[in-house]
Length: 129
Length: 483
Image 1: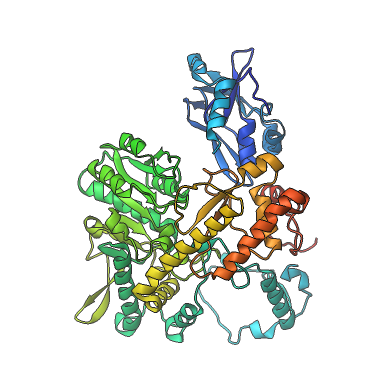
Image 2 (image 1 turned 135 degrees about the horizontal axis):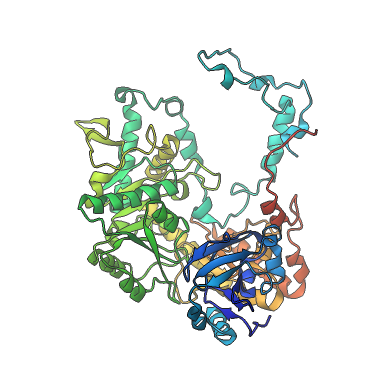
């Protein structure tokens, strides 16, 4: 699975997509869903929640483990992907399409500090034993 | 088949029926049951057959090698059970006067003393009734200690990322902020990260040693020096005590407080969901905070110590004192073994793990920490196999069932991808270990030659592969009659 070059990434395996309206979509990467295995639940934040960078913002639970999702940047939640709650397997089928929520960034400069596709690939290479 | 499905209206099981009538007065009318409870109406013989069949389906340590080890259920000698179940133990009332319970109190006093000796601690309280409760009490004592000195600035507990998940949970329950520190490539806590993390805000460090990675923390005395120098205390999670029992004392490593899982190491099954027992041990400076009650001895007489005598105690965890049955089993176990026996447990638990690790490595399995000597357990990773063949640790675990072995722990610790955590425990013979290695070798060959055989396992169990996604998402635990 290739890593989309139009997204930004975190070391903790979240992806960030800049939308045309100035908001960003946030999800977990293909690698993250592969480590977790079959997803059984997602717990999304609520519209209006505000997060600071690296704060816990959602939970992804699989048959193997429950993993916290960390907000890649600071901002306010403007939309959540409600259908995902009933179909968490969408994350397994299309991790880079199954966004969890959208944030209105409070400090857009934080986006520049995130990893690009090559930087994230390097993180994955270093993770392998 | 559920026992309810054997039921037919009017069938009775008279051996289970009450032989006396009882009446209780004074219960408010609205709390009284108006309808009969929904109990299965089954004959005695159908009941016997139902539970006997269930027991035959049980893939248990009484029938198969069970490489979950002391973590879940090592073999618990029958003698501990039968002695703990003597009528004078079973019939003893927890509120019986001390005068009539001197035998039981003597056992508890001796157990406290023996656990002090094994752990190198100055005091022990037997009252916590589960590992999580023992942990909670341990961290509460750390907080009480700092507060008693007027030091309210210590708000952080440091937990290595290889810790049991209960450690950070405990710290949060006690109101602390958790600071996670990383593990290095060799499986040790990153000492530089620890040095950078400690300060006047550090209340303590929680450590499992040997760690969940199955290796002994090599820098433990240096870690203890760093944390103590910063004014913090050290907490020892006794989950893996089996590996060092009687050989190394946590007190000598510098720990200030410890909980011991009697339901792992000391002859009580852990996997059954309880009851558990997790005595806490403390170094001298934490003695005033120990939970009550515990047993003391004066002029040859044993008695309970209560909160009146211990004004700084963090208090009581329950109305009485812990799970007496589990404590008795542990007492009998340590008395049967003696000091030498306990040394042999640590030695054989470690020898068995290292023998298995060496043989599996020879057979071609990848060991997660190949340069390290195993403690009582070790980790095999199937990451390479999964990348090449798609066969996962879970597939291999299920295939082991077909070959007559219980699966080892899978996917824990989470630091190692596609892992099997294998703990043979001290009670297994070389023949059993060799048979396990043979089965693992066979599966390795199958992965190459008949991968579907492994992918679709198990083949010989009463139930085949389960839909664990459905089971998690549509959890259904209550039987209801057909409408």
